Image (cartoon, rainbow, N blue to C red; front, side):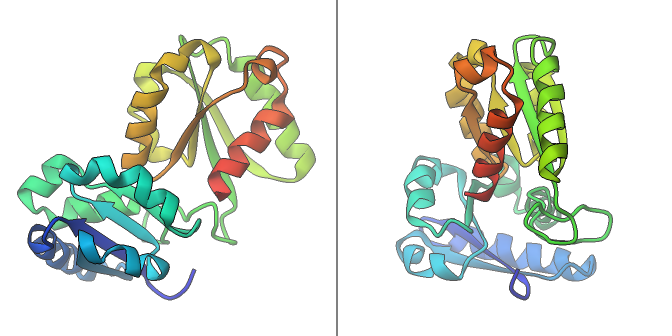
Length: 221
C-alpha cells in the first residue's frame, strides 16, 4: 500500500467530520499510527475516490454506501462511521474503527490480507446453529492447504457472527439463513468487509474449493 493509509470522512457539509477527523489525527499521532485522515463534503467525494484507501460515511449517508462502493476503485473500502462515534466526535474510537478493518499495520494489530507480510485470510461462515457448516469448514481448510493459502476459517451461529465481523475479512451465509443477508450485508459494510450467500449446490455438496474461491474473490474485489 502506498505510504500512509488515506481515509476520507464524509458528511453532507463536511463540518461534523472536520472535527472528528482532527481528533482522529490527534489520536493517531499519540499512538504512532501512520494514517492520513481528511474530511470531505459529500458533493466533492466522487472526484477524490481515486486517491482514497478507505471512505467512511456519516450514518445519515448510509443509503449512499452501495452506490459509492460501485463507483469507487476496487481497492477502496466504503463503510459507515459508528453512530455513537459520530455523535460524540470520539477520535480514539474512530481510530479503533479504522484499525479494525485491518488495512494498516499498527502496534498490537494484524495487517490486512492484502499485505504481503501477512497473507492470512479470516473467513467466517454463518449458519443457523454453527454446526451444519463444520464439515464445510474442514473441506475449505483442505482446499486452502492444497492451494498454498493461509486461511483461518470459522463457523458461527448468526447472533454470534454479528458480534465478530470486526475480526474477519469476509462473511458467507449458509443458504438456510439467506433471510439474514440484507441485515448482515449492512453490518458488514459498517466494518468495511463484504458478505454473500453460499450457493446451495456448493453448500449441499460441501464443495470446499468452490466456497473458498467465493470468499477469496470477495476479499480481493
